[in-house]
Image (cartoon, rainbow, N blue to C red; front, side, top):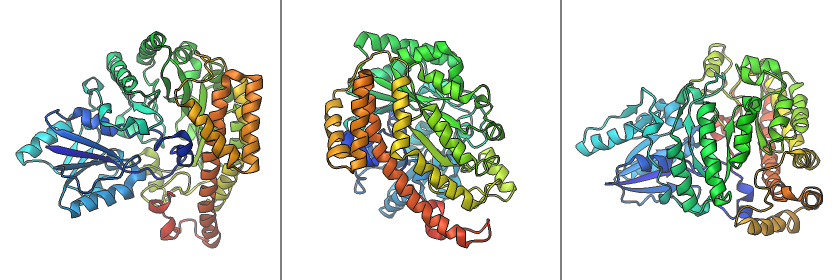
Length: 523
């Protein structure tokens, strides 16, 4: 039997880096891990073909027996389009992933089979049922699967050279209870992890395929600190034997700052960057959303402490909590600058389906739309301490300030000059660094505006003179600013449209024009 598995094209967002992919020499930053994972679960008797629409076109003429599609809520429209086209051609279509897990009713009658929640057990069961002609319409995993049963993903079926970084997963689930988070809805609050041997086998396979970067996609890598430390020790030994060929990054909670042993292990394993959901510098807003782990201690001190280990902090920030008034925008800006955080993914609060936040706001009549759009363009939440107009206007001004040339350069250079030493101390670590450097010079100096050219040259020269060990990072930060600046400008154009509408709508509960509702919000 032939199976064709598809990941839809990502709508442009903060993380897609669309505007600098040509400079990086890649077609996509990193792949959807669902594709090689499901392929790994599939018995080898079947032929499996993977298609990531971010790096290749969908083959609608495939002779596959089963078409499988996966994706997140942001992929909703494209999932429906792909499914409809294959159904029109008489194909058997199945869909899984976070979108169908959170909103299974939206695909009812539009595909043949829906997979709700994780598929380690239900996918093999479906294949057996399908072969007998007795498949179900919905396969729902009730008990959370053991990660120890997850086989090696089929990375070998992927076009790995088209990605900047490869993705692997160590654990699922998070012990915290943030009100807005859909992760605990899908994966639970008890972290479930693979064995160290499983993960090291995945790292070895990624290394064999020639990749030099790995993103551990765990939503909280330190959900189980004991297991995380065991894995980090194994990674460190592996890296030392091979001269540190892989650069790692992952997502963690802010309480990592209180464990120096853990931070040292992360540094020694070659983990250079971590994404942390800081959300807000305002304690009342953190407590409101049950993010109590961030309300302990001083957030600014915690961020600086992490940076002292040579680890970059990328921040997830949110505006629009019930305790956020119009002063929050200036507070957020000052915090990001003082924290020396170059990359801040700042968005508006959205209520994801099935989350406690969604239920609370729905009962209070404070949801504009049931579904969710792009958190950088549209929020389905009626704010409490300010009007929608004030939220959009304040958020727009905040984005503009964050990625203003001078503000970005100031906090980035502060970080580069003050961060702790990294374990390798190499100026270049990847074979493709020289090519990226030349393309960066072309796109950010030769073919750039005078302001961009000056910012790029000054960042690189200042770093070379003051801290040459951070030169590679300076090149990276100068390059990624191009994406952030241009994308923020595009978002602000969309926000301007919404702001014009809101100035004309006296009723806070009135909907926007159809073209600007969440399904169309992504650029």
